[in-house]
Image (tube, rainbow over all chains, first blue to last red; front, top):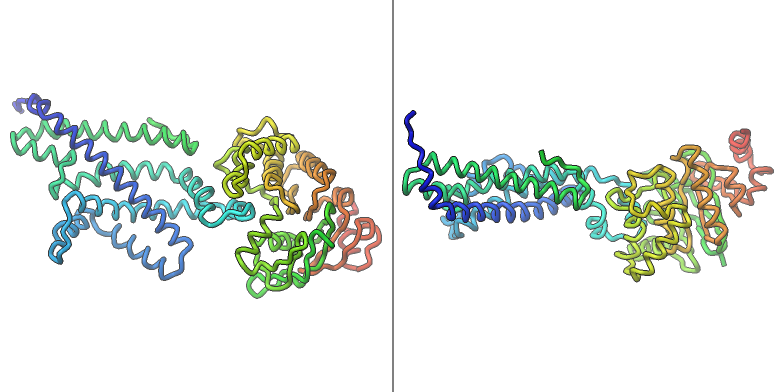
Length: 225
Length: 245
């Protein structure tokens, strides 16, 4: 082991890594947000919909959760252009990640729907709430509180593991930037040491943000450490 | 004309007929008590009135308007006129007491905010919980939660209040604080239909007692008539068992 660490070149290119980290954060937030919307709708349909709709939701969830995210994104990026559907690499990553997160979030949110007490719903009905108002004022706050920890964990999964797949289709998020820069000056060890640290900082900041949000919005007594 | 008239109301759970033609009426400001053994359909009458259990026959007159709950509009109309308090309070767990009281008036009725807030504070005073406005339901005792549920129902200014065994889930010590709140409402002239096992309370506040068994009304009359001189064997048997002690 007489490796000579040279971090200087990494610091010179640190702004590029920061740009990558910022893109990673944006991709994670958008994919998680879109996935949460899909998951909310699918979980509601799976709970209250007719069997044909439930079957469609089940098919989507089974198909997505039983295949690797990489395959799904390659399908969009390399597969679909063969039939004329050509999207940019970032669009493919976002669509793939969103659909992927949507399937997992359907499962997580479904547990939340099942835990809503029928009596609270009836109380809402007798107060004159429409179905939409019940969802808005009773079901979503209840779900948000009861499954908040699972949601927060899954956000970290999307943020770190999900977005880094983008490097394989040339999206310049944090992992992608690290690969680009390393292959120019061959400082793989230095770059990936720093990038690993950046991921840790990113998830740490996100965890604190999520814990504070949970306390403020849903009275969840989440621990930061 | 009666304020509330229930005419031959029927309801089924699957093939089981749980209400076999219920008919009774009360005037404005009166209190009717539904009594009877478990499973006799007392709570189902209240659920049917609120449109939670669909009715399969009959109709209900509320303040002169006839409805049979055949459309969402009619169900809404019934819920506009009546409010219900359940045995298990059913407060919204993720909201404070004040939010529980003001959610429906503000967000669903879209009433004026300052009026809603001052009415909510008045109601909390009425049920003796002025100091709990910012508490969450898991920070309250059962009796306190039930009084919040009572105030929440009243915040919608119902013409008729339905109370479904509101003291059955409470510690004996807490029962009286809830009954006191209901007494105040009775004094204010609130029209109520109550399902209760508190026979002494029923005798005190009710104008009319309806004795039910197996989805039917067996006998109805004033509290004195039913408790002291029941005409039917079934009523005599029931009241002799529960009034003995």
